[in-house]
Length: 441
Image (cartoon, rainbow, N blue to C red; front, side, top):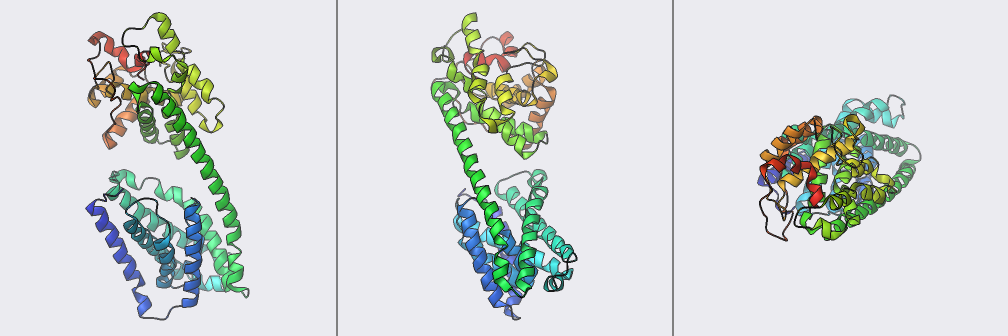
């Protein structure tokens, strides 16, 4: 994002100033410049490869520096790689400065904690298992500083609420950083051994294999995303009145899932479920989806087959997991009056209950060719009224809480035709969940 808020720029400037203060002792005392230059060059090379291959960053070299060098010298190791590594988004200069300051502060903290616990002597003597204790404390310090700084920039630059900015950051990053810390400790011990730095470099070989495997996973994931985008674009082309609906339902499903406290993998799966919930429309005649008038019972039955069509289309895509069940069952109702199978209560998969609420909410708050968008408050009131009969009350409550925290800022759904008022008031109780019968949800 080009437009970075002023407070976020000030936050980055403060981090840069703090990093410079951490480096200041280098001008007052000698440093092991040979080791600094070698580690800095190694980190810069590894960072460039890691970033271009989409495999994160090379923490083992940074942590090896924290275990081998005084804190100011260890902080210096991070700067060349952070300042020269590729940056995908603008403004590149600000992002590089932020990354350099963040890593310098984290490495400085790790080196300081490691030294306070007597870790440098333990590394020099290869004193195991005692060397693990100061190394573990250093990893905790490293991870904690990264978490604090990341949460701050999320709150200031991305305007994430403060109570959510730091949620889960530490727990998600601790395990991978601990593995990198163990590799860094092995590098440091071998560096101090009679075999020297060359032996330390061998530790990076298994890390390179892991990076290669992760890069393969990233490419596979990108292919999955491309598959989903192609399916959604096909639906949007066929049913232009609901353009953007799938993405918004995916976003609302993700909001509900996060509010329920589901793990990241399930959150992503439910996002896929929301995006693909209407893919079965590809099997419905276009004239029915765009019909501007009441449907005959036979036409309604044809349209109500779209969940089954969608399930048949995605059943072979293994990475979708429980999203496939949501595609099939997102029009079931809690009281058993939905379709295609009339499931009730707990028989309806949780993923389908999430998507049903997200789908109905976006259908009510979007402008279509035959109805005007309803205010968010009116849509929420309708969902709450139908909770327990049409919708799972727990999912409705989760969406309400998510909206209170984040709000709702949807894109325009249809720019094809002007809106007309919706039907009579007595029909609106059915609008939230039956609008699919007119190709709108």
